[in-house]
Length: 223
Image (cartoon, rainbow, N blue to C red; front, side, top):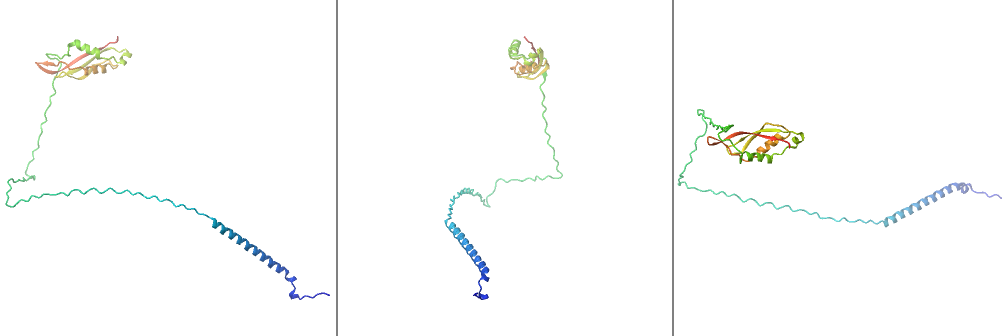
C-alpha cells in the first residue's frame, strides 16, 4: 500500500534550503568564535604590557648674579663767594676791542733766517794734522787693522787705494771717501779702517784749529 504525503509538508523538497541555512549558521558561529578568541588574546597581551618611564632628572640652572652697579660719583659742590655791594674791587680788568677795522693795516712779521756758514776746509795749512804718535804709529795701525779681502786675495788683486778724508777742529775723522780704488773689496776695507781711526792732532792756521782735507794712500800687497 503506497503512503501518500501532503505535498505542503514534504520535507524532502526543503532539504536543500535547510542545508544551506544550517551551513551559513555554522560558518557564522565559527567566525564569531574566532573573533572572540582574538579579542581575548589581544586584551590579555595589553594587560601584560609594562611601561617603564624614567623621569629625567631636572638640573637646576645656575644664574649668575649681575655685578652691583658702581657707586654714583660724589656730587660736585660749587662754592659761591658772596660779595657785598659796598665792597670795592681794587683791580679792574680792561677788555680791549680786538675786532679788526677796515682801516687797520696788519704788518707781516718777517723772521730773518740765520745763515749758517760751513767752516772752510783747507788743503794746506801752517801746521798739518797728524796721527797720534806720528807716521810710525799710523803705519803700525794700518798694518794691524787692515784685513785683506778674500775676494781680492782669490783674484790676485793688488795695488794702492787712495782715500781722502777731513780732520775736524777737534781731531775727528769725517767725510771719508775713495779717490781711486782697485776693487775686489779693497776700497770698502780702506774706508772702514780710516773711519775707525782715533782722533788726530788737528791742523792749525795762524794758531787756530781748522778743518783740513787729508789724502792717504793704502797699499794692498799679497805676500
